[in-house]
Length: 287
Image 1 (cartoon, rainbow, N blue to C red):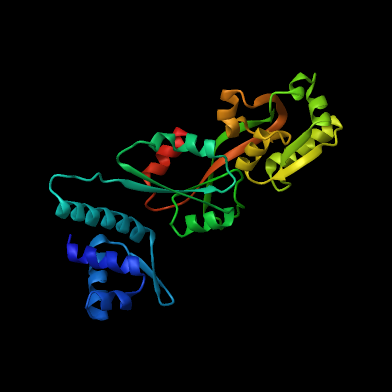
Image 2 (cartoon, one colour):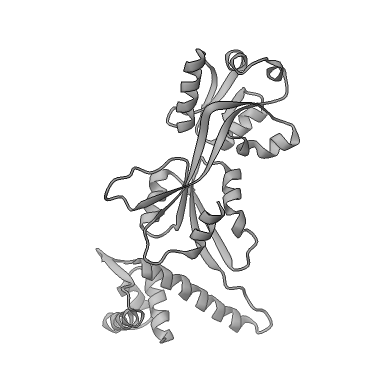
């Protein structure tokens, strides 16, 4: 491999603009184009696609940039000192729905935590933004609690990695003395997921079957906020026990009832790739 080619490719990949890179490196644009083309021929794959004036990495380009960054980072460490050697880490880029349970995310990531050969890059956001990052190859895998819309043109693969029951959770107190689930749901204010949530739809169906009209203290999108409200005693929360795992272990919250027929599914979403990140398969198998 010609490492001049690798250096020029890395510079263009980070700039996203051939003209700007050529000026910065004091090269002609045509000379830089030739270097990039020779590098692509050596690897046997196109590394960029042009969108207007911008150069956008292909899937092969993204993989080449990961390796280029590690190679040049190692070279910089070598120049700094021969007494210190850095660890080469393979990146895995994971997106997670902003409202998804942090405890669940930690359980999913546990096989990679502490590994010296892995760099975990974790981003959170809205479902549409995360799926866009997956399509643009800026993310390797996305964690959701619902599957993205599927059709013949959809590139997404949804892997069901966990199904967790949902419970009624609250502070120790009068609710713990109630004789039945129906009594608790009827007599105490509730902290519920928002109407768009699959858990909320299943809970509303359960309430209808029991003939109960809930007293709604709060409707909350974020699981972390539901946890805080339950800790403050704002009401009984409808959520998966893993969200409040620490509080249940400490006894500051109690799991009062499992809600029959109410559960939350967790999905790892990927896309079909010619060069899949092998760490993704490890995570899905581990889950």
